Image (cartoon, rainbow, N blue to C red):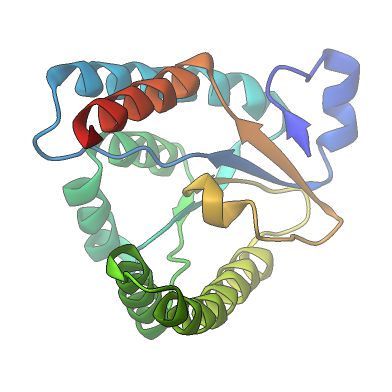
Length: 205
């Protein structure tokens, strides 16, 4: 797995014929949060765009994958726009440059995943948590397998792709050895994580 900023000119050539995934953590707007958070988000997505431009020396994005969307075409893009305007703007830019948007979710699997994860967030007893976690883990594995298959079956030799997805789940996906994974992690992502931690620490006390 490669970190952003490691691509010197001699190194780029070694990636040209490989399948590539540029992975971006999906920070989303949160209703009712302070304006400070919005400013950090805007900076983050600007940095992501800038870093992607540099990464694309190893291959222009030809396929775009986004979590939590199972609808195709304009319907799927409208869902992304309603959830995360900044991510939509990035995706639209790549589509306008010739990339293809491909949904990676299965409606039934995604629905069950969200339901079981929601249950875990409210359960109070260890015994119940253990039982629910078993069902959650099963559906999580099904979701991971489905997403992996969609991406690998649609990513052609030499192609580069953009995957916008939360790191917690994305990090569990084990892609084939012939796929090179690049993590797009600008410093502004750490700023958001620190801000969120401070915010929740203050509001939980």
